[in-house]
Length: 387
Image (cartoon, rainbow, N blue to C red; front, side, top):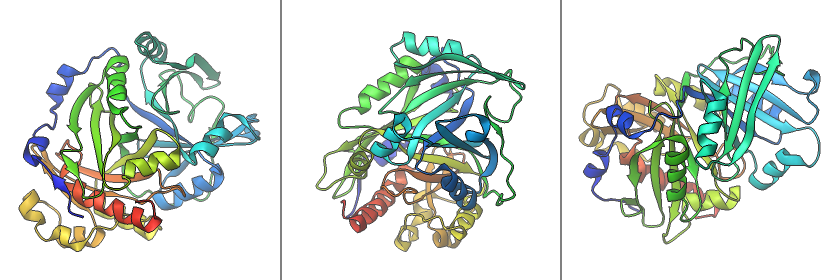
């Protein structure tokens, strides 16, 4: 099951510089960061307990029957700059029920923090984006928030959040969530990137969407000729906004002897959607070690991966034996190196998972690890009978 990686040096040399990114990205839609990620789930209360226990998130806010919300309930969790919103329906039928029935638990909203939500809406919809939410002012005693939104791939949407005039806990309509159960954080700091899987022949369309409607620039690209295994292949392009704070890799399946991880996702998610969320840490060994203790399952990396590690990546600060013990992957580009590890799917369907990443100068996405990563995923697919 050996993977082929053609012209690896050339691929790594396409790693972007921030200066080049500033030149290529258009600044008509300045984005300040990721505001929140909202998942539609079957049981928000139990999902919240999982993310608190296993990932170290803290209780932040709540909306439901007690706050006057009749059709849904939402639990808001936070860890450093990462905010997750877990939402479940309270009644039969409706949009949330349909989303869960079709896709299972998964990401519905990727909310982006902006200075002006009305302008963000006008800039994107005037360039062809489909409207999801017209600019709406939401108020309570703590001030006001303006939100607007557009559709992107599948049923995923972007909400633009303007909160400069708000001092409340999260959004109007939410109250502070007081909980006596708050396990300590595991060291997760911010959203590094979020990866979307799209259908056959759709990658170019959605990369052009981000370039045209949101001013993103393409910073790296992989084809099935660049990276594949004996069994499966995929194609990927990484889109980024001008300041580099928002990065969206887009994956598309490619023909192989067997079913690729992207095909498996599309089959079980029933369409395009967010495949994984990459969360950054300043100490991946401590973070991964703590997450394992709390029950998080990671992909298995064979010990042979580490046999010639230093020859491949050069000198690193970490002890190789410690990295080997935890199955942490390492890759280097012209700017430095990175360490990363991927969880197994965190939902019952083989769809959404998380990546834990620590950057030590590197701005790339671990192309040198694709061989080990793909083969690890294929082992899981074989266990599931979906390869």
